[in-house]
Length: 134
Image 1 (tube, rainbow, N blue to C red):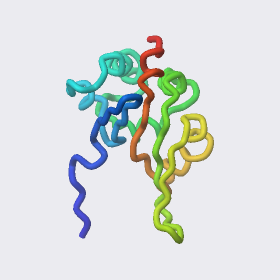
Image 2 (cartoon, helix red, strand yellow):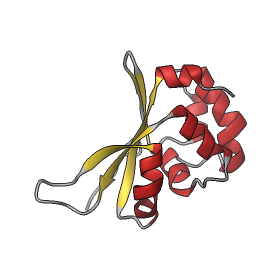
Image 3 (tube, rainbow, N blue to C red):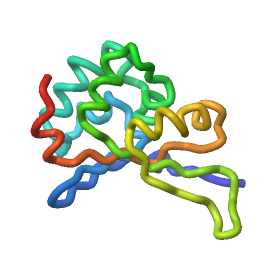
Image 4 (cartoon, rainbow, N blue to C red):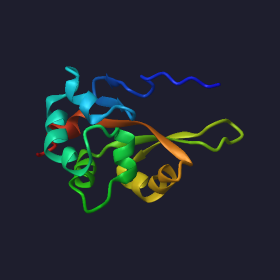
């Protein structure tokens, strides 16, 4: 029996240039955290909450986002990178890779919807967050 921790893929890590968000973080949880940058919290209120409930996770949002939504435009402008892991093992084990938002939408979103792969985390460069206009 496999036991999953309730905090798996719920984290926010920063280094000098980037912010990493675990994909199982809900938008509501992110709004409660003090460490989350204020500009991203404002984007949650003004943009993401209009497209999906605050109880949704980042992974759910990314698997459902469509080109006609403001969330799509926001993620595109933020130039996020998405870490995706395939659920089909290869000779070397499970394959994880970082994709740009556009690559994710073209190649992996349908696989995430079909549960052939899953989103582990998103990465935002601090420079892109700083330049992000709301």
